[in-house]
Structure formats: structure tokens, C-alpha cells
Length: 138
Ligand SMILES: [Zn+2]
Image: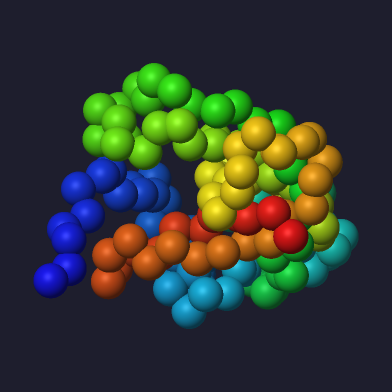
């Protein structure tokens, strides 16, 4: 019997703007917005390019390859729902294509984590409606 997922789920502030990201995650694909005017790939999703303010945007699939930009090992989660997960890794990762995003590092020995280490995106199907993008060491 499946265990009910009881942790907080994403609540996008702009569901229309972010829908392609979440729909792709459900397919285990990582999509990022790209500016067709200046070729900038960015995250979080916005209605204008943060570099040139163009609204000429598209969604592109990215590799999922990344480097660990920064991280902390959480021992005392701010939200009690995550108490059973400690210690866990809260991280900023930088995709090969440029964007940085906040995520978790999973499937790892936390004592071996190092800034700039190579990572790969993995997809955590937490409910039928939500898949979270996380990263694991390569
Ligand atoms: Zn641009």
C-alpha cells in the first residue's frame, strides 16, 4: 500500500508561467526558459528575459548535468514535516547551461559532498501530480 505523502508540495506563485517546468518534470525531463533574442537560459521562469527584457521566449530541454554551487546539511528543519529526513542536503546547483536552482542532493554520502562536484538531475515522483527535481552525484 502506498504511503501518503505528507510534506508540503510546491505552490507556484505563477502557475501559468511555471507549468511547462512542472509538466516536464512529471515526464522526467528538465526544461528551462530560453530567450530567443539573446540565447540566455534562465531560471526561475519569468515573462521577460532577465538579461535583455525580451518577451520572445521558449522552453528548451537541458541536460540535467550540474555542479554543486553551494550547500548546507540540514539537521534542524524549519518545517516539522521534514524532521524524519534529517540530515538532508539543501543546495544551490548550477546547470551546465547556466541557470542555478535550489534543490536537494540525494543518493549521496553527505560527508563526500564538495563544492563544484558533478551532479545529475533525478526526478522524485512524490505524488501523482507532483514530481520534484533533485540531484545526485555523478
Ligand atoms: Zn534575452
